[in-house]
Amino acid sequence: MMIGKSIRLFLIDGSPTGLMTAEIGQWTGKAMVCPRQSLPKLASRDEARRPGVYILAGADPQRPGRERVYIGEAENVYDRLKQHDKDEKKEWWQRVCLFAAADQSLTKAHIKFLESRLVELAYAAERAEIENGNTPTRPALPEADIADMEVFLAQALVLLPVIGFRFALALVGGESSSSELSNSARASESQAERFYLRAKGAEATARVTDEAFVVLKGSTASNQDTASWTTFRSQRDEMLSNGQLINHPDKTECYLFTENVPFSSPSAAGAIICARSTNGRTAWKTQGGKTYADWQEARQLASEEGA
Image 1 (spheres, rainbow, N blue to C red):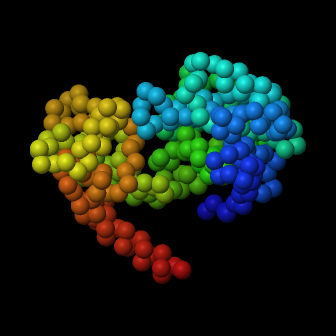
Image 2: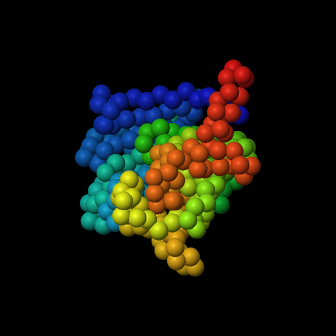
Image 3: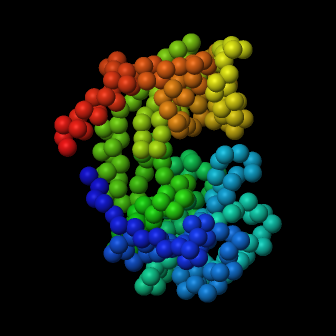
């Protein structure tokens, strides 16, 4: 079981959309978030002039609704960000998050290690378009330094979704940065119930996460819809447009999910799978035949009894 964490957010400008710092209790690291238009304000911030890693983030111009990120490192982050701000190939980014050490203990090798790990995790999560290209090579570090950097990274990964950067947060588990988080992820993975839906030649598998009802990569969805089906049709069209769904290479009556896709509800997911209005609470079932509604009720009762 993961223990609670205390996070301190400070709005430097007093605005929720302005310059912000984020810290975790008893952690030497510090995160800073800055909108692109506020970049000059970083000039006076000591944190931005230290060695650190940073993440540029913005909407992907080629895939509406999807984020694009670039992960980098620098011994003086502010100077590097000024270069990115002038780069015509990086017009897409809208905000930046940087991580530095409050005690200035990060070396060049440390930040290159953190950069490599963040890129690696970003690719594994498959939540954003990664601008970096290949994953940077990890530098050779002493064993103790590697352990320290994994702990630093674990804390950074906790902060990132809190401050609006979800690119490294896997939808359905996946790799975590520290042994503590990896053990937790493995436990969650083993306990997570899978749900199945078969209809009109389509077969889909899904999992429930803290974020959404997630249909897993490799699932299929029927393309046998009728003119009367309008609910969620536009969402399916968008999924086809952005490549989340493609024509199945072997089953002409189906589309294929190319990635894990989150939905707001089991019924929304069911409608896409079945190409018709669907009560997802009864259509999705466990391997043992229990409906999603029955599973949810049983879980709620178990929680109340254990309270």
